[in-house]
Length: 201
Image (cartoon, rainbow, N blue to C red; front, side):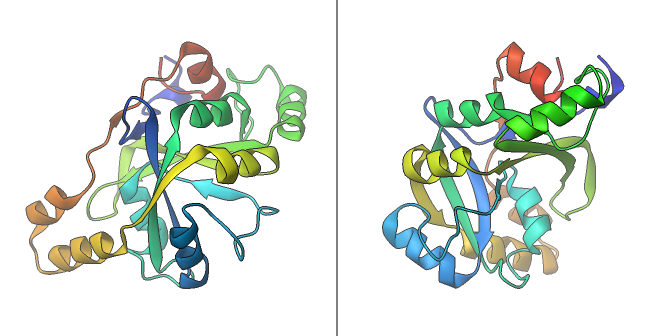
């Protein structure tokens, strides 16, 4: 295994047909989405939107739902076929030898791909960085349209879960907080997608 792939495994909660991702929004976007069962205006399809399968990475990014404009955490169930379509039409956000033949190939893929993938250190319950990586998937253009119109099967507000877990941590009840967190496990990526994402073999 080449060094850049070490620790890159998509971990998520998933069923036979869906995978769970998370997004954080202000109330003005979250409430209409919960009512409609998908993202609707004032959500803007014209902007890239990032979905994250790691609940703790979402907590790190949103500060346990306390950062401005990230006060509502949405758990979003999406179709696994759609998720894998996104990965198949993705490009890594940075050039990587061993994944791309050269810079020209990476630039060409970037120009043609409606999806970006980033690998960032995953987080533990204290939001400290871990040796393994969490995937973030950025959707734009056609990918956003497919996400909003076809892939989303369910939306749930899990803000209270975030706030409750943080309260337990602040009280020193770490194991109790950890038990509240969603169970995540390695997602079975096809070989071609692992190669495309620079993920572990």
